[in-house]
Image 1 (cartoon, rainbow, N blue to C red):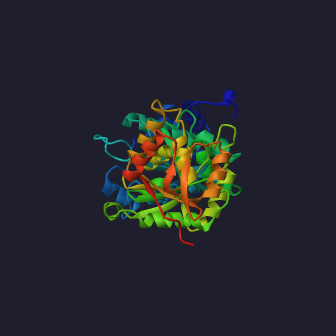
Image 2 (image 1 turned 90 degrees about the vertical axis):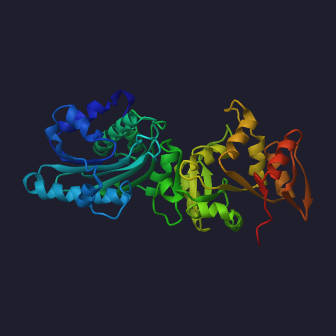
Image 3 (image 1 turned 30 degrees about the vertical axis):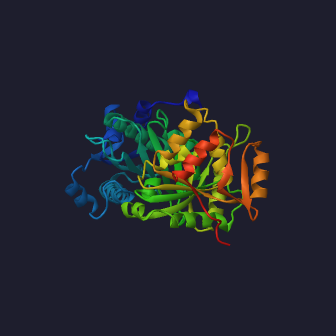
Length: 441
């Protein structure tokens, strides 16, 4: 759809109301009934809305959808979707099924509470037919609400819900078009989509791994996670309150020592940190951002290729929009207050300390402060002197010196030019940077 052809939320809701073939139910928990409200207020709502419901009370919700799950969870959302669809067909299929494409929209959302202390996120789901009597298709989204005010979060959910329903009927020619249609009149500063599940013949030709990767390459999420078991999940489900080890890299080749870096760093996590966390997890981390201004970033397909190779080593992967370590740690700290260790080689350490951080007013000092202020540590593994020299030459860095032992350079024996070396030695002495031994053979 061209810019000239785009229509706003009001027009989308009205056009759906005026379509005599689309009809269904709306069930919303949390964040008001903002999606249904759009259809009710634009006019001709009886053309689309069969029922709206909001089961805010937990006992009522359990009675309708079953007990035993968290109220803001994909399990609760699926229960809602199944129950609402069953009721819709039971009530209307006989009388309208021959001429109606049915829809059931559901959401369960935790918008900002009165005290402002909760995690603001939610699940949205839509079951729809593309033709009367046709097979069902499902879209399930996990979203993070980024607005500071409850009312703005409600408004964002309303817009997103209308975009979703409109999009499955008008924007399914490809992954990019569909995802862009979901966030029209929104932005990443307001709402973030970090997990998508698609089921049914409407999406039979789509590679779900590419859809998931496109969330970060297309700017719909700050980060997405590819768990080692391959099942889609939002970062909060995997990282919540855990101590985390991340091994960042480009991973043009994958070697066993990459996994050993994670294993060795996990073994070094302080006992008291683990006792205060909900366990630990090790992950590879990739960025889709360019490594330099004259280089392209990773495409969604390239991300999938890297992730599949890394899974064979036994760990999942976090994929970020940005490449700076402090930006990665800021994203992860939204989901955990546990210790974060970056398991890195000397090249990433040097890059982090050589970066000019031109986007920060305090340049290098502010970049370092942001990186280490959030319970972050760098576990730095040695590198062969020959590989280190080759890498430094490739990036035109010449003012680092070192003392090698048996052909290897350890972080404790590496020295940037002064005065940066004073800061570097302080970070080592304070154990923000932790020199690690070589990985086992």
